[in-house]
Length: 471
Image (cartoon, rainbow, N blue to C red; front, side):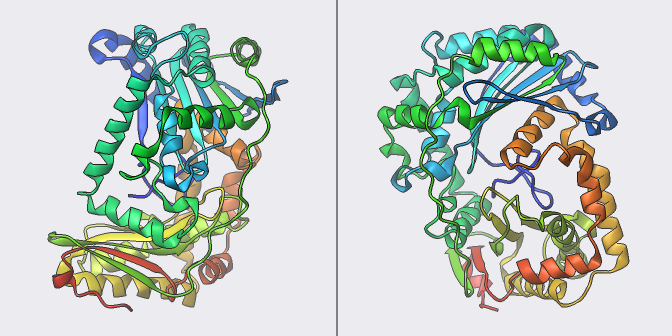
Protein backbone atom coordinates (compact mmCIF):
# COMPACT_ATOMS: atom_id res chain seq x y z
CA UNK A 1 0.00 0.00 0.00
CA UNK A 2 1.74 3.15 1.23
CA UNK A 3 5.52 3.41 1.29
CA UNK A 4 6.70 3.41 4.88
CA UNK A 5 9.73 3.80 6.98
CA UNK A 6 12.53 3.07 9.33
CA UNK A 7 13.90 -0.13 8.50
CA UNK A 8 13.39 1.94 5.46
CA UNK A 9 12.09 5.14 6.95
CA UNK A 10 11.13 5.29 10.58
CA UNK A 11 7.40 5.13 11.16
CA UNK A 12 5.28 5.66 14.25
CA UNK A 13 4.37 2.01 14.22
CA UNK A 14 4.71 -0.96 11.93
CA UNK A 15 4.71 -0.85 8.15
CA UNK A 16 5.98 -2.21 4.88
CA UNK A 17 7.90 -0.94 1.91
CA UNK A 18 6.50 -0.46 -1.58
CA UNK A 19 9.02 1.74 -3.41
CA UNK A 20 10.20 0.37 -6.72
CA UNK A 21 13.51 -1.39 -6.18
CA UNK A 22 16.17 -2.10 -8.77
CA UNK A 23 19.14 -4.31 -8.07
CA UNK A 24 22.09 -6.09 -9.56
CA UNK A 25 22.27 -9.28 -7.49
CA UNK A 26 24.42 -12.30 -8.12
CA UNK A 27 22.60 -15.41 -9.42
CA UNK A 28 22.43 -18.09 -6.73
CA UNK A 29 23.69 -20.78 -9.07
CA UNK A 30 27.04 -19.02 -9.50
CA UNK A 31 27.78 -17.61 -6.08
CA UNK A 32 25.72 -19.67 -3.64
CA UNK A 33 28.49 -20.00 -1.10
CA UNK A 34 29.27 -16.29 -0.92
CA UNK A 35 25.64 -15.23 -0.71
CA UNK A 36 24.74 -17.82 1.91
CA UNK A 37 27.77 -16.78 3.93
CA UNK A 38 26.78 -13.11 3.80
CA UNK A 39 23.12 -13.87 4.60
CA UNK A 40 23.95 -16.15 7.53
CA UNK A 41 26.58 -13.83 8.97
CA UNK A 42 24.22 -10.88 8.65
CA UNK A 43 21.62 -12.68 10.77
CA UNK A 44 24.17 -13.29 13.51
CA UNK A 45 24.71 -9.62 14.39
CA UNK A 46 23.92 -9.19 18.06
CA UNK A 47 21.16 -6.72 19.02
CA UNK A 48 23.23 -5.74 22.08
CA UNK A 49 26.19 -4.96 19.86
CA UNK A 50 23.91 -3.03 17.50
CA UNK A 51 22.63 -0.87 20.36
CA UNK A 52 26.18 0.22 21.28
CA UNK A 53 26.69 2.30 18.15
CA UNK A 54 29.30 5.04 18.03
CA UNK A 55 29.39 6.51 14.52
CA UNK A 56 32.36 8.52 13.30
CA UNK A 57 31.49 11.45 11.05
CA UNK A 58 33.59 13.55 8.68
CA UNK A 59 32.86 15.85 5.75
CA UNK A 60 35.03 15.72 2.64
CA UNK A 61 36.21 18.90 0.86
CA UNK A 62 33.51 18.45 -1.80
CA UNK A 63 30.79 18.40 0.87
CA UNK A 64 30.18 14.63 0.98
CA UNK A 65 29.18 13.62 4.51
CA UNK A 66 30.66 10.26 5.53
CA UNK A 67 29.49 8.19 8.50
CA UNK A 68 31.43 5.13 9.63
CA UNK A 69 30.54 2.44 12.16
CA UNK A 70 33.16 -0.24 12.75
CA UNK A 71 31.76 -3.74 13.42
CA UNK A 72 34.56 -6.26 13.20
CA UNK A 73 32.74 -9.37 14.44
CA UNK A 74 31.75 -10.39 10.90
CA UNK A 75 33.56 -9.94 7.55
CA UNK A 76 30.83 -7.88 5.90
CA UNK A 77 30.77 -4.26 4.74
CA UNK A 78 27.67 -2.30 3.74
CA UNK A 79 28.19 0.98 1.88
CA UNK A 80 25.11 3.13 1.40
CA UNK A 81 24.64 6.54 -0.17
CA UNK A 82 21.60 8.71 0.49
CA UNK A 83 21.08 11.47 -2.06
CA UNK A 84 18.78 14.26 -0.91
CA UNK A 85 16.39 14.05 -3.81
CA UNK A 86 13.28 12.01 -4.47
CA UNK A 87 9.88 12.09 -6.09
CA UNK A 88 9.10 15.45 -4.45
CA UNK A 89 11.50 16.94 -7.01
CA UNK A 90 9.68 15.41 -9.99
CA UNK A 91 7.79 17.86 -12.24
CA UNK A 92 4.08 16.97 -11.98
CA UNK A 93 3.87 16.17 -15.67
CA UNK A 94 6.89 13.85 -15.35
CA UNK A 95 6.16 12.08 -12.08
CA UNK A 96 8.38 9.03 -11.74
CA UNK A 97 11.52 10.81 -12.98
CA UNK A 98 13.57 10.37 -9.79
CA UNK A 99 12.56 6.71 -9.62
CA UNK A 100 13.57 6.17 -13.25
CA UNK A 101 16.95 7.81 -12.64
CA UNK A 102 17.54 5.48 -9.67
CA UNK A 103 16.51 2.49 -11.75
CA UNK A 104 19.02 3.36 -14.44
CA UNK A 105 22.06 3.94 -12.22
CA UNK A 106 23.25 0.35 -12.49
CA UNK A 107 22.21 -0.07 -16.12
CA UNK A 108 25.52 1.23 -17.45
CA UNK A 109 28.23 3.80 -16.75
CA UNK A 110 30.79 5.52 -18.93
CA UNK A 111 33.22 2.64 -18.32
CA UNK A 112 30.97 -0.38 -17.68
CA UNK A 113 27.78 -1.62 -19.30
CA UNK A 114 24.99 -3.23 -17.31
CA UNK A 115 26.34 -6.74 -17.92
CA UNK A 116 29.81 -5.82 -16.72
CA UNK A 117 28.43 -4.22 -13.55
CA UNK A 118 26.36 -7.33 -12.84
CA UNK A 119 29.25 -9.68 -13.52
CA UNK A 120 31.67 -7.81 -11.27
CA UNK A 121 29.34 -7.73 -8.28
CA UNK A 122 28.24 -11.29 -9.05
CA UNK A 123 31.81 -12.58 -9.06
CA UNK A 124 32.32 -11.56 -5.42
CA UNK A 125 28.85 -12.62 -4.28
CA UNK A 126 27.73 -9.11 -3.43
CA UNK A 127 24.76 -6.89 -4.20
CA UNK A 128 24.38 -3.50 -5.83
CA UNK A 129 21.07 -1.66 -5.82
CA UNK A 130 19.32 1.69 -5.95
CA UNK A 131 15.83 2.87 -5.04
CA UNK A 132 13.93 6.12 -4.87
CA UNK A 133 11.51 7.33 -2.19
CA UNK A 134 9.58 10.55 -1.67
CA UNK A 135 12.31 12.64 -0.02
CA UNK A 136 15.53 10.84 -0.92
CA UNK A 137 17.17 8.22 -3.09
CA UNK A 138 19.52 5.50 -1.87
CA UNK A 139 22.16 3.45 -3.64
CA UNK A 140 24.09 0.74 -1.84
CA UNK A 141 26.42 -2.20 -2.11
CA UNK A 142 27.09 -5.11 0.22
CA UNK A 143 30.32 -7.10 -0.03
CA UNK A 144 32.63 -9.28 2.02
CA UNK A 145 35.30 -7.25 3.77
CA UNK A 146 38.05 -8.39 1.43
CA UNK A 147 36.13 -6.78 -1.46
CA UNK A 148 35.51 -3.41 0.23
CA UNK A 149 37.58 -1.48 -2.31
CA UNK A 150 35.56 -2.97 -5.18
CA UNK A 151 32.33 -2.05 -3.37
CA UNK A 152 33.44 1.57 -3.13
CA UNK A 153 34.53 1.55 -6.77
CA UNK A 154 31.25 0.18 -8.16
CA UNK A 155 29.03 2.37 -5.98
CA UNK A 156 30.98 5.48 -6.95
CA UNK A 157 30.83 4.52 -10.61
CA UNK A 158 27.04 4.24 -10.75
CA UNK A 159 26.54 7.45 -8.75
CA UNK A 160 29.10 9.62 -10.54
CA UNK A 161 29.21 8.22 -14.07
CA UNK A 162 25.87 6.70 -15.16
CA UNK A 163 25.50 6.78 -18.95
CA UNK A 164 21.72 6.27 -19.17
CA UNK A 165 21.86 4.31 -22.45
CA UNK A 166 18.72 4.77 -24.54
CA UNK A 167 17.97 1.01 -24.95
CA UNK A 168 18.13 0.49 -21.18
CA UNK A 169 16.04 3.61 -20.60
CA UNK A 170 13.24 2.24 -22.77
CA UNK A 171 13.51 -1.24 -21.23
CA UNK A 172 13.32 0.04 -17.65
CA UNK A 173 10.42 2.35 -18.53
CA UNK A 174 8.52 -0.64 -19.91
CA UNK A 175 9.21 -2.62 -16.74
CA UNK A 176 7.90 0.20 -14.54
CA UNK A 177 4.86 0.71 -16.78
CA UNK A 178 4.11 -2.99 -16.47
CA UNK A 179 4.29 -2.66 -12.71
CA UNK A 180 1.98 0.39 -12.74
CA UNK A 181 -0.57 -1.41 -14.89
CA UNK A 182 -0.43 -4.53 -12.70
CA UNK A 183 -1.03 -2.39 -9.61
CA UNK A 184 -4.41 -1.37 -10.98
CA UNK A 185 -5.65 -4.85 -10.07
CA UNK A 186 -4.45 -4.56 -6.47
CA UNK A 187 -7.19 -2.90 -4.38
CA UNK A 188 -4.73 -1.97 -1.66
CA UNK A 189 -2.46 -0.11 -4.06
CA UNK A 190 -5.41 1.51 -5.81
CA UNK A 191 -6.77 2.73 -2.47
CA UNK A 192 -3.35 3.94 -1.33
CA UNK A 193 -2.75 6.00 -4.46
CA UNK A 194 -6.21 7.55 -4.35
CA UNK A 195 -5.76 8.31 -0.64
CA UNK A 196 -2.49 10.14 -1.30
CA UNK A 197 -4.17 12.26 -3.97
CA UNK A 198 -6.90 13.29 -1.54
CA UNK A 199 -4.65 14.01 1.44
CA UNK A 200 -1.85 15.73 -0.49
CA UNK A 201 -3.89 17.40 -3.19
CA UNK A 202 -1.56 19.69 -5.15
CA UNK A 203 1.55 18.67 -3.19
CA UNK A 204 4.33 16.43 -4.64
CA UNK A 205 3.52 13.74 -2.05
CA UNK A 206 0.28 13.21 -3.98
CA UNK A 207 1.87 11.37 -6.89
CA UNK A 208 3.32 7.85 -6.77
CA UNK A 209 7.09 7.46 -6.52
CA UNK A 210 7.09 5.31 -9.67
CA UNK A 211 4.90 7.76 -11.61
CA UNK A 212 1.82 7.00 -13.65
CA UNK A 213 1.09 5.45 -17.03
CA UNK A 214 0.59 8.99 -18.34
CA UNK A 215 3.68 10.71 -16.93
CA UNK A 216 6.30 8.00 -17.36
CA UNK A 217 6.18 7.83 -21.20
CA UNK A 218 6.79 11.59 -21.32
CA UNK A 219 10.21 11.29 -19.66
CA UNK A 220 13.14 11.53 -22.07
CA UNK A 221 16.82 10.68 -21.78
CA UNK A 222 17.55 14.42 -21.64
CA UNK A 223 15.21 14.71 -18.62
CA UNK A 224 17.06 11.89 -16.89
CA UNK A 225 20.48 13.38 -17.61
CA UNK A 226 19.43 16.85 -16.45
CA UNK A 227 17.92 15.51 -13.23
CA UNK A 228 21.07 13.56 -12.41
CA UNK A 229 23.36 16.51 -13.17
CA UNK A 230 21.25 18.86 -11.03
CA UNK A 231 20.40 16.61 -8.08
CA UNK A 232 23.25 14.12 -7.65
CA UNK A 233 25.86 16.23 -5.89
CA UNK A 234 28.38 15.27 -3.17
CA UNK A 235 27.25 18.17 -1.00
CA UNK A 236 23.72 16.71 -1.17
CA UNK A 237 24.81 13.15 -0.32
CA UNK A 238 25.38 11.12 2.84
CA UNK A 239 27.62 8.05 2.67
CA UNK A 240 27.34 5.42 5.42
CA UNK A 241 29.96 2.68 5.77
CA UNK A 242 29.18 -0.09 8.23
CA UNK A 243 31.01 -3.31 9.01
CA UNK A 244 34.46 -4.83 9.08
CA UNK A 245 36.33 -1.72 8.02
CA UNK A 246 38.33 0.90 9.93
CA UNK A 247 37.57 4.61 9.88
CA UNK A 248 40.99 5.21 8.32
CA UNK A 249 40.34 2.70 5.52
CA UNK A 250 36.86 4.13 4.87
CA UNK A 251 38.27 7.66 4.73
CA UNK A 252 40.99 6.64 2.27
CA UNK A 253 38.59 4.74 0.00
CA UNK A 254 36.05 7.59 0.09
CA UNK A 255 38.77 10.00 -0.97
CA UNK A 256 39.96 7.73 -3.80
CA UNK A 257 36.55 6.99 -5.26
CA UNK A 258 34.42 10.01 -4.31
CA UNK A 259 37.01 12.76 -3.94
CA UNK A 260 36.78 13.87 -7.58
CA UNK A 261 32.99 14.25 -7.42
CA UNK A 262 32.37 17.91 -8.15
CA UNK A 263 30.42 20.01 -5.71
CA UNK A 264 27.51 22.01 -7.11
CA UNK A 265 24.92 24.61 -6.10
CA UNK A 266 22.01 23.40 -4.01
CA UNK A 267 18.98 22.95 -6.28
CA UNK A 268 16.05 25.28 -5.71
CA UNK A 269 13.41 23.85 -3.38
CA UNK A 270 9.78 24.78 -2.83
CA UNK A 271 8.94 25.68 0.76
CA UNK A 272 5.27 24.72 0.38
CA UNK A 273 3.94 22.27 2.98
CA UNK A 274 0.92 19.98 2.52
CA UNK A 275 -2.40 21.60 3.46
CA UNK A 276 -4.69 19.90 5.96
CA UNK A 277 -8.15 18.63 5.01
CA UNK A 278 -10.90 20.72 6.63
CA UNK A 279 -13.85 18.34 6.16
CA UNK A 280 -14.53 14.67 5.31
CA UNK A 281 -13.63 13.82 1.71
CA UNK A 282 -14.77 10.48 0.29
CA UNK A 283 -13.81 8.62 -2.89
CA UNK A 284 -15.62 5.40 -3.79
CA UNK A 285 -13.98 3.13 -6.39
CA UNK A 286 -16.26 0.43 -7.75
CA UNK A 287 -14.69 -2.96 -8.50
CA UNK A 288 -16.10 -6.47 -8.72
CA UNK A 289 -14.65 -7.68 -5.44
CA UNK A 290 -16.04 -9.68 -2.52
CA UNK A 291 -14.33 -7.39 -0.02
CA UNK A 292 -14.03 -3.65 0.38
CA UNK A 293 -10.65 -2.08 1.09
CA UNK A 294 -10.91 0.96 3.34
CA UNK A 295 -8.18 3.56 3.84
CA UNK A 296 -9.06 6.44 6.15
CA UNK A 297 -6.83 9.20 7.42
CA UNK A 298 -5.40 12.66 7.04
CA UNK A 299 -2.20 14.67 7.35
CA UNK A 300 0.14 13.42 10.06
CA UNK A 301 3.50 14.70 11.28
CA UNK A 302 7.04 15.26 10.01
CA UNK A 303 9.94 13.21 11.36
CA UNK A 304 11.37 16.25 13.12
CA UNK A 305 8.14 17.01 14.98
CA UNK A 306 9.02 17.13 18.72
CA UNK A 307 5.92 15.03 19.45
CA UNK A 308 7.24 12.11 17.36
CA UNK A 309 7.89 9.86 20.36
CA UNK A 310 4.57 10.54 22.07
CA UNK A 311 2.79 9.95 18.74
CA UNK A 312 4.70 6.67 18.33
CA UNK A 313 3.44 5.42 21.70
CA UNK A 314 -0.10 6.66 21.06
CA UNK A 315 -0.25 5.04 17.63
CA UNK A 316 1.08 1.72 18.96
CA UNK A 317 -1.85 1.60 21.37
CA UNK A 318 -4.30 2.68 18.68
CA UNK A 319 -3.44 0.38 15.81
CA UNK A 320 0.26 -0.32 15.29
CA UNK A 321 0.58 -2.79 18.14
CA UNK A 322 -0.79 -5.80 16.31
CA UNK A 323 -3.11 -7.97 18.39
CA UNK A 324 -2.60 -5.77 21.45
CA UNK A 325 -3.92 -2.63 19.70
CA UNK A 326 -7.36 -1.15 20.22
CA UNK A 327 -8.31 -1.30 16.55
CA UNK A 328 -7.42 -4.99 16.29
CA UNK A 329 -9.28 -5.77 19.51
CA UNK A 330 -12.41 -3.95 18.34
CA UNK A 331 -12.55 -4.57 14.58
CA UNK A 332 -11.17 -8.12 14.46
CA UNK A 333 -11.55 -9.77 17.86
CA UNK A 334 -14.83 -8.38 19.16
CA UNK A 335 -16.70 -7.65 15.92
CA UNK A 336 -15.09 -10.13 13.50
CA UNK A 337 -15.12 -7.59 10.67
CA UNK A 338 -11.59 -8.00 9.31
CA UNK A 339 -8.64 -10.33 9.49
CA UNK A 340 -6.35 -7.43 10.21
CA UNK A 341 -6.44 -3.67 10.72
CA UNK A 342 -3.64 -1.22 11.38
CA UNK A 343 -2.97 2.46 11.90
CA UNK A 344 0.17 4.22 10.77
CA UNK A 345 1.85 7.59 10.96
CA UNK A 346 4.46 7.92 8.22
CA UNK A 347 6.65 10.90 9.08
CA UNK A 348 8.58 12.41 6.19
CA UNK A 349 10.64 15.55 5.64
CA UNK A 350 7.29 17.35 5.61
CA UNK A 351 4.16 16.08 7.33
CA UNK A 352 3.40 12.63 5.99
CA UNK A 353 0.14 10.69 6.15
CA UNK A 354 -1.75 9.17 9.04
CA UNK A 355 -3.95 6.31 7.95
CA UNK A 356 -6.00 3.34 9.07
CA UNK A 357 -6.38 0.48 6.60
CA UNK A 358 -8.38 -2.73 6.52
CA UNK A 359 -10.33 -5.09 4.29
CA UNK A 360 -13.82 -6.27 5.17
CA UNK A 361 -16.81 -7.89 3.48
CA UNK A 362 -18.71 -5.47 1.28
CA UNK A 363 -21.80 -5.79 3.44
CA UNK A 364 -19.91 -4.85 6.63
CA UNK A 365 -18.02 -1.83 5.26
CA UNK A 366 -20.23 0.69 7.10
CA UNK A 367 -19.89 -1.18 10.38
CA UNK A 368 -16.10 -1.34 10.01
CA UNK A 369 -15.91 2.35 9.19
CA UNK A 370 -18.02 3.21 12.22
CA UNK A 371 -15.79 1.04 14.39
CA UNK A 372 -12.62 2.80 13.22
CA UNK A 373 -14.07 6.27 13.83
CA UNK A 374 -15.28 5.19 17.26
CA UNK A 375 -11.77 4.15 18.27
CA UNK A 376 -10.29 7.41 16.97
CA UNK A 377 -12.80 9.39 19.04
CA UNK A 378 -12.07 7.20 22.08
CA UNK A 379 -8.33 7.90 21.87
CA UNK A 380 -9.09 11.62 22.03
CA UNK A 381 -11.69 11.35 24.77
CA UNK A 382 -9.93 9.67 27.70
CA UNK A 383 -6.47 8.67 28.91
CA UNK A 384 -5.12 5.24 27.99
CA UNK A 385 -4.80 2.69 30.78
CA UNK A 386 -1.57 2.21 32.71
CA UNK A 387 -1.35 -1.33 31.27
CA UNK A 388 -1.67 -0.10 27.67
CA UNK A 389 0.96 2.57 28.25
CA UNK A 390 3.40 0.18 29.92
CA UNK A 391 3.05 -2.53 27.26
CA UNK A 392 3.47 -0.06 24.40
CA UNK A 393 6.62 1.47 25.86
CA UNK A 394 8.08 -1.92 26.76
CA UNK A 395 7.66 -3.18 23.21
CA UNK A 396 9.01 -0.03 21.56
CA UNK A 397 12.06 0.09 23.82
CA UNK A 398 12.73 -3.64 23.71
CA UNK A 399 12.45 -3.96 19.93
CA UNK A 400 14.50 -0.86 19.17
CA UNK A 401 17.88 -2.64 18.69
CA UNK A 402 16.29 -4.99 16.15
CA UNK A 403 15.84 -2.03 13.80
CA UNK A 404 19.56 -2.07 13.05
CA UNK A 405 20.69 -5.60 13.87
CA UNK A 406 22.31 -6.06 10.44
CA UNK A 407 24.83 -3.92 8.57
CA UNK A 408 22.19 -3.22 5.91
CA UNK A 409 19.62 -1.94 8.41
CA UNK A 410 22.18 0.07 10.33
CA UNK A 411 23.49 1.80 7.20
CA UNK A 412 19.92 2.79 6.26
CA UNK A 413 19.16 4.11 9.74
CA UNK A 414 22.48 5.98 9.92
CA UNK A 415 21.74 7.80 6.67
CA UNK A 416 18.28 8.77 7.85
CA UNK A 417 19.48 9.93 11.28
CA UNK A 418 21.84 12.28 9.45
CA UNK A 419 19.23 13.27 6.85
CA UNK A 420 16.65 14.27 9.48
CA UNK A 421 19.27 15.83 11.77
CA UNK A 422 18.38 13.58 14.71
CA UNK A 423 21.92 13.43 16.13
CA UNK A 424 23.89 10.33 17.02
CA UNK A 425 22.46 10.39 20.54
CA UNK A 426 19.41 8.87 18.83
CA UNK A 427 20.98 5.42 19.27
CA UNK A 428 21.30 5.74 23.03
CA UNK A 429 18.48 8.15 23.83
CA UNK A 430 15.57 6.65 21.84
CA UNK A 431 14.56 4.25 24.66
CA UNK A 432 14.78 7.10 27.17
CA UNK A 433 12.65 9.36 24.98
CA UNK A 434 10.02 6.63 24.75
CA UNK A 435 10.21 5.94 28.49
CA UNK A 436 9.52 9.63 29.23
CA UNK A 437 6.16 9.54 27.42
CA UNK A 438 3.30 9.82 29.91
CA UNK A 439 -0.38 9.03 29.71
CA UNK A 440 -0.99 12.77 29.59
CA UNK A 441 1.32 13.05 26.59
CA UNK A 442 -0.59 10.30 24.78
CA UNK A 443 -3.93 12.01 25.36
CA UNK A 444 -2.51 15.38 24.32
CA UNK A 445 -1.12 14.15 20.99
CA UNK A 446 -4.26 12.12 20.29
CA UNK A 447 -6.31 15.29 20.64
CA UNK A 448 -3.84 17.25 18.51
CA UNK A 449 -3.07 14.80 15.69
CA UNK A 450 -6.18 12.60 15.29
CA UNK A 451 -9.07 14.14 13.34
CA UNK A 452 -12.05 11.78 13.01
CA UNK A 453 -14.20 14.76 12.03
CA UNK A 454 -12.10 15.72 8.99
CA UNK A 455 -10.57 12.88 7.07
CA UNK A 456 -10.04 11.40 3.64
CA UNK A 457 -11.73 8.06 3.00
CA UNK A 458 -11.12 5.78 0.04
CA UNK A 459 -13.15 2.62 -0.46
CA UNK A 460 -12.40 0.05 -3.17
CA UNK A 461 -14.93 -2.72 -3.61
CA UNK A 462 -18.40 -3.53 -4.87
CA UNK A 463 -20.06 -0.26 -3.95
CA UNK A 464 -23.56 -1.52 -4.73
CA UNK A 465 -23.19 -3.99 -1.85
CA UNK A 466 -21.12 -1.80 0.46
CA UNK A 467 -23.57 1.13 0.35
CA UNK A 468 -21.09 3.29 2.24
CA UNK A 469 -22.39 6.30 4.10
CA UNK A 470 -20.40 9.29 5.32
CA UNK A 471 -20.17 9.11 9.12
